[in-house]
Image 1: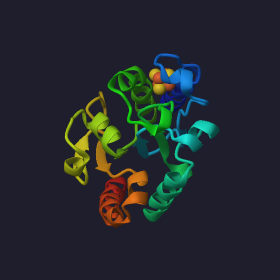
Image 2: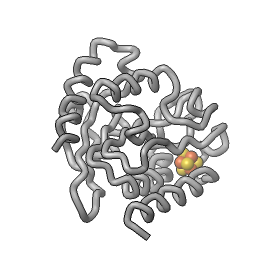
Image 3: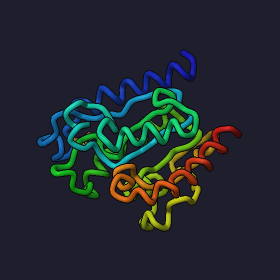
Length: 195
Ligand code: SF4
């Protein structure tokens, strides 16, 4: 089996496990597990916080208004949604879209770790506080992390995976003035992908 086939198989196995997961109480309130989707060989992977109402209903990541804005962000750097992989820190929706709890993140993180291990992107973009902090293993606020490049701590052997922390598209819907900051961050990502 080639390396690419082995990594794809790992992703499918992870999907199968996540789709019936009951490791945390969110399994009792979710409608659908939202594993994430996209290109299994993507150079660029986005990580958000958790599914919202639309995602929970459809079982797909970033399909609501924030998802439409994320699609525009991806297209602004010359890529299509199907070129990248999009996932969340949590695979199930927290009730009323409340913030993820630490226990939930700890229960769910093996899925994201295995997704990243299988996809092995060149660049990870952390969308918002929870994703940025998880990827960079820090408690610093997103205002400090945004725009700063870091390394994915659990990358393992092989080429390091760069992390760009930026604002979540849902935040941009409420604060359109911050779009220019995200554009600056995405220009850096675009250059990293060219290297
Ligand atoms: S949020 Fe993650 S750990 Fe919790 S039930 Fe869903 S898939 Fe399992």
